[in-house]
Image (cartoon, rainbow, N blue to C red; front, side, top):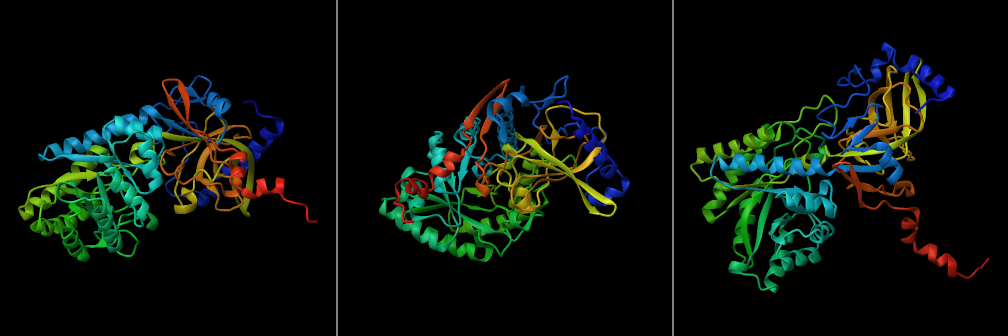
Length: 494
């Protein structure tokens, strides 16, 4: 788009402030000035992301201007082909790694990352099972046609109704998280007449004490947190399960955290888990070890996620090594990837509303770029300090790169979409801004803060865009407020 004279003047002012070398204290150590502030980092964006001769970004061969005209902004865009391809890659990697040791793998899609009926259809058609954690997630999976026998149910506080529903449906496995839940489930399964060959299959979630090198809120295997049983308590829990005819212990489960690079944490956790497995199998068959997920993706150009094939090989080798040392057979393995399946496939589109340089100190200025979304459509930066990237999507520019902070429209100073990024210094109101790697945990964590409707979700593939989740409207939000209807019928007492 052509810049107005005030916008060009603002661009020159911005570059005076933000391109100066004295501003480097505002820049994170990992963020370098790019040679080209229009370039798309290859591991961050979906493979289908490209620019045309005019510099406009396309996703799944659909121009972003078309997406804005048809669906508006903010907008979640999901590349269907990228999700399907990644689901196949992940399944193939774990199938190959386990087959080399003569065992089988089951790969569950961790649906909390991004859950719609279409997403469930894509991943199940590509061979994945589905992991859910609430009755709502279970309902979506079922509405998509998922086989209950290929669903695993998680959660640290499953309700009686959720457990009853799972048993009635014949959910493939339920991961037990507490002694209270164990007794609840046992009573439900007994009332349903489950025993012997029809007993409900369960796994015990344990905490191995391995601390994933990630944000504290994402580390889920340390001792002082809400999930699972301590290693020292797991044998007693297993003994109790084996006393109950309506339940069948099929394995143990561990998840060490999220957004993890490398295999060291998984290997250490596997060693501790196998030690427990060796003791538990003395009391009966235990065919499955579920090692969870948490595999990281690239959010910025400096992120270097471990290839899924290397992860699969490294984790399976670690388990095989520990079993060999103890002289015990290697069990079948299960995994629960979510972010790595859908994260890179998602891009969020925003429209720039205002741009302003903010003086931080006498010689430090930061350019704030405000967009029409924010923490209501991506809570992760506010929750975890998560880092993202951004690019102007509606055009390219030869303007010098300027240091910017992309912020949302909410009444919070922590409403940050991208904490630090270099964009062309002439970024201006009306520009389309694209934030990549938003396929995981953005739609899932979305809210109506400040009464902002949640955005639609659009799937793109081979030049075609289709709505898979309708965006909310103000009328949708008001429809839930019973006081609105009451105002129409209430007598005037003034």
